[in-house]
Length: 69
Image 1 (cartoon, rainbow, N blue to C red):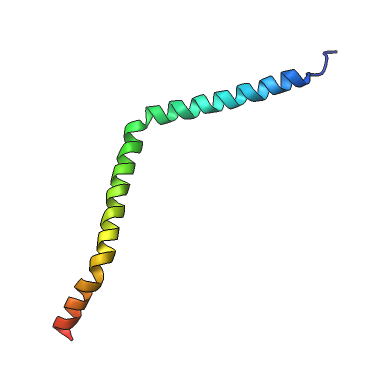
Image 2 (image 1 turned 90 degrees about the vertical axis):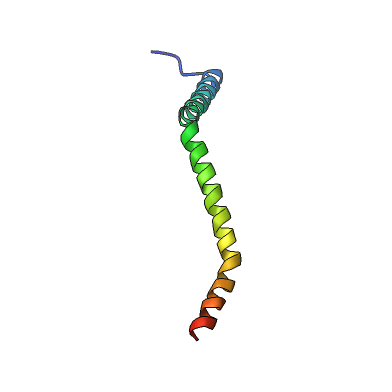
């Protein structure tokens, strides 16, 4: 029979698994960096336009309400 794993073996296996997961996440992010950057830029522009619209919308609706009321 084989000996049961020691605490050191278990901790080493957990650390190796964590390092492998971090490396895979880093590889995925670096492989898709241009897509991630594009999404961030377009999302920022969309958020800026939404904020601008929220500030302008009451004036525009009030203007049209005044024309047709």
